[in-house]
Every structure is written in structure tokens, then in C-alpha cells.
Image 1 (cartoon, one colour):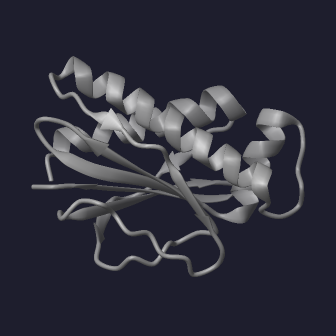
Image 2 (cartoon, one colour):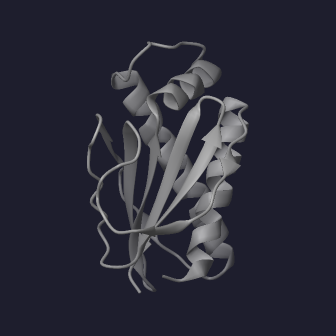
Image 3 (cartoon, helix red, strand yellow):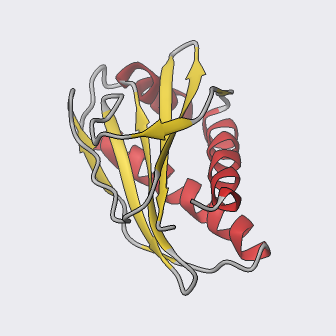
Amino acid sequence: MNVEFINPFLQSLLNVVSTMASMQLTPGKPRLKTDNLAKGDVSGLIGMVGPQTKGSMSITFDQSLALQIMQNMLGENPGKINDEVTDMVGEITNMVTGGAKNLLAEKGYDFEMATPVVVAGVGHRISHKADGTKMIMPFTSPYGTAYIEICFEN
């Protein structure tokens, strides 16, 4: 996977959560991911296709972090993952990908974004749409952890 593709997504996630939810996430150590099992409770997955490459990105949140982000963004906390929380995760996935798309365009990469798919539940799976190396990186907070996964064709 092209390393140039990773940082724009990480920067965009930090920016979106900071701007929209007034919350700071602490980046952890990236590593390769070899399975499809999600590490958290609710995930947004989005595909991207462009002339140079194709890939996908997912963001998975622990329930506690997703609920706190919702509290900070919208002033409500339903206490569990419901349709409003999954809608918010889809929107965050869209915003992060849009921010990364703008950063990548500055480097000469262009791609179209699909509509995000949101999956919730303990032990759910994430199936990336590209046949490439999967990278996962945790982002911690006092409220729980978010995991970003990026997979682009080599």
C-alpha cells in the first residue's frame, strides 16, 4: 500500500472529531491487519475508486466513544447504538473520507467516493473492497477507542 494514502485519512479523522465533537483522539501504533473482525461496536465503511488505485476505509468506534461523540455533536445520548448513532457514524465516515480526498487531490490523486455502509454489533465483520494490504490504527480517548482501517490495492 502506498504510504502517501494513509496520513490524509489519519489527519482527517483527527480533524473531524476535533472540529465536530470537540474531542481529542490520541493516535496509537499502526499495524497490519489479517482478519475481517471489527475491533469495536459500530463501523462505517466506504469504498473509493480512482484512475490510479481503488480501496476502502473504515472507522470503527467503541460504543462508549460513539455515544460520547453523539453527545458532544448533537447534545443527546441514547445510551445504546441505535439508528441515530449509525447515521452519525456514516456521516463521520463521509466527512473523514471527504477530507482525505481533498488532501490526496493536492498530491495528484483523485477518486470517487461510494456511499458509506454502517454495520453495528459485537463481533461484526468488515469486508474491504480492495485486494491489498490492510492497515489498522487505534485512536484512544478517555471515552473509548476508534480504529481506522485503510486498504488500497498495491
